[in-house]
Every structure is written in C-alpha cells, then in structure tokens.
Image 1 (tube, helix red, strand yellow):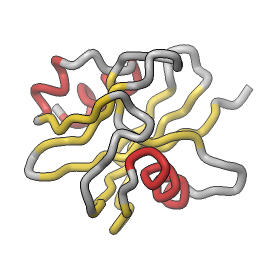
Image 2 (cartoon, rainbow, N blue to C red; image 1 turned 30 degrees about the vertical axis):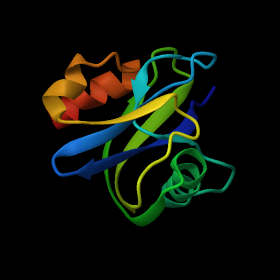
Image 3 (cartoon, rainbow, N blue to C red; image 1 turned 135 degrees about the horizontal axis):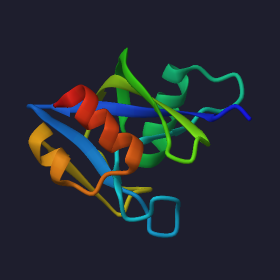
Image 4 (tube, helix red, strand yellow; image 1 turned 60 degrees about the vertical axis):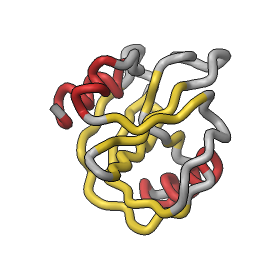
Amino acid sequence: MEPIAVVAAVIQRNGRFLVGRRPFHKKHGGLWEFPGGKLDAGESLAEAVVRELGEELDLDVSSVGETLGEHVDDDGNFRITFVAVITTGDPQPLEHTVLGWFEPPLLRALDLAPADARFVTDVLI
C-alpha cells in the first residue's frame, strides 16, 4: 500500500524553527513536530501547506519554497515531505497543545516524532 502523503512546514525566523507538540490523543501524541498535515486528493504540496497552516496555526503563507527532505514514518504509513515556508503573523496553537521556536541544537533535545527527528538530524544539523 502506498504511504499517505503528508507535508510538513519548515518555518524559520531569526535562526529558530517553529514546532508544535502533538495532541496526546493522536498518533505520536505529546511529541513535537513541524506543522502540517495530509494532502487532500488532487492537492499539491503548496496548496496543502497553505490550507494546513491556516487551519492549525491561523497563519498566512507568503511563499512555499524548496523541498528540504522526505522521510517515511516508522510504520511506513506516511511519507512526510518537509518544505521551506515563509509565513506572516503570529502562530496560534489551534491544533497543537503548545508551540515553540527552537534553534537547531535545541530541536535535537526535544522529544520529536520519529520522521521529524530524522529530518532534524539529516538536514538541519
């Protein structure tokens, strides 16, 4: 079975990256992740990231940049594509329990979801 396509927004401001803690009732609950979500049928990465950041963080997307990496989740059910995104506004935790801005070395110290942890290790550090 083909993995479900997911987009993760890599939002950087002043050398720090935005991550959120997943709700405890969801898969990887309590772990930190780059914000994003599943692509709807026929939706591009850019369209999905604009929709997801609006729904999850009440953020407006200024631009969607390059793909920075791609990882398959541990159970193989999700293929997560990490893309550079520039946003405006202050993110609101509408989906996550808490949000935070972290420099790359501090990201490694967080309890990240598995694919996000691999992305940080492979790409950001």
